[in-house]
Figure: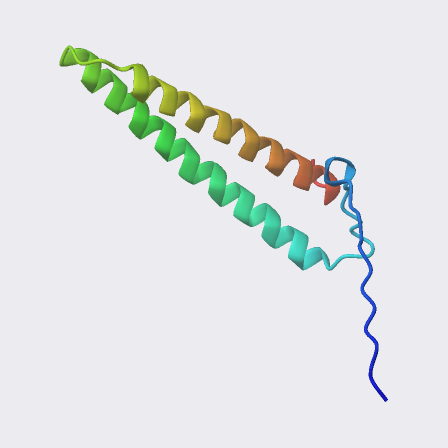
Amino acid sequence: MREQRRWCAISVDVANLRLDTAAMDRAVWQEYLAQAERNVVETEKRVARHREMVAELERGGHRTTAARGMLAAFERFLVMHLADCNRLRKELGGG
C-alpha cells in the first residue's frame, strides 16, 4: 500500500506576531535579546566609524553623497535594533 502524504500551509501575520513567553522557552527569548543587544553595539560602532569617514572625506574635499547615504542606512539599522531590544525587554517583562 502506498503511503499518502498531506501537507498543510500555515499562514502567519508576522507584523502582529507577539511573543508568548508562557509557551516559549524563556531562555531562547533571552538569547534573542542578547543578540539584539550585540547588534546595537556593533551598529553603534559602524555608525561612529562611518561618521569619521564622512568627516575625513569632507576635510579632503571629496564628495560625500554615497558615504552619507550609507551612514543614513546604518543609522536606520541602529533604530531598528534599538526597537528590537525594547520590544524584547517589554515582552520579557523587563522594560
